[in-house]
Length: 130
Image (cartoon, rainbow, N blue to C red; front, side):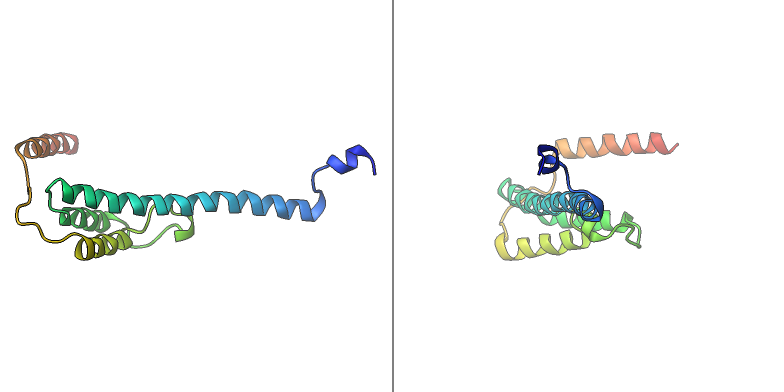
């Protein structure tokens, strides 16, 4: 066997199938990995919110608002999605709150700074819509 034959890439049908499988399979592993990281980030966000004294159920409210704005039909297969489905995020957040975050006697529901930012964003949204 010549040196060139030993170093030649797979050819023919087997080579094309192998290359196609690798070009599809490798990115899909990164997508699944990305979803797992997003789920972990959601849990950490809930824990940080709770430890800072804020109401973690606000995260559930946010996801529900986000879900209401999503189209009813799914355009992508969940296999190709980089983030968990919003419905799954709502359920996961509720589960974490109920199982891991006991009720607090005092919670921060809002702050002066938050209200100022909300007012600025509302004004900016109104100016964009006009």
